[in-house]
Image 1: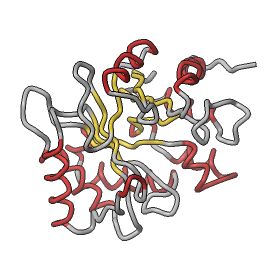
Image 2: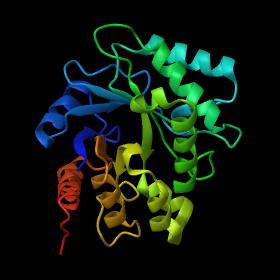
Image 3: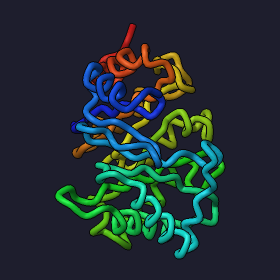
Image 4: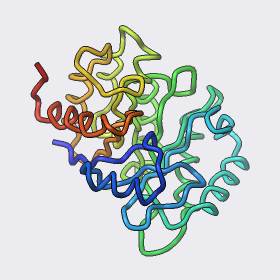
Length: 247
């Protein structure tokens, strides 16, 4: 059974202290922030790099070693303290598994030194990018475990079932089944920004079955746009993790 920790998602927009209070009141133990935002004053946090095109972000060029080193250096220079985890995007098709492994090493290597260990680096997926679906996630993870096994405890996959559905449609359940359960370290739960429901086209039972098989820690971000729906989204996750279903 996975060791699940809830993360206040970056979809909750408010001053940082108010977000910390929201996290505590809803049972979230971490706060998700974007690059350039200050780190929370007391709670641990997750740094999530926005998808290309959002907030002016350009597609990541992980295939370019100099660009990757510069990105990691600039990212570390903006940090106040060290996040528990960093979620990165795969970027265009030109970025191969070897490039993503190098990106993980660069981000961890550039992290601020101090009492906290370097962050875990979690690789996301996105329709139309280098890793669009479950097969792509499985291919990347197999490469990492084979070529950089010492990195595996400090890396992982960031799964967004809504984005997976956008790429796979009716094949989504089959794509979920391709993903190695132990590799999933982050789950972004929503349906197009709304509270998830079993009536959604996303196969939530398959998704949470995958998470339950994970023997390690999983960060769960209930990424709803309406903060008033956050507690309902967390309740959905709790129920699904207990193998029950809403009526």
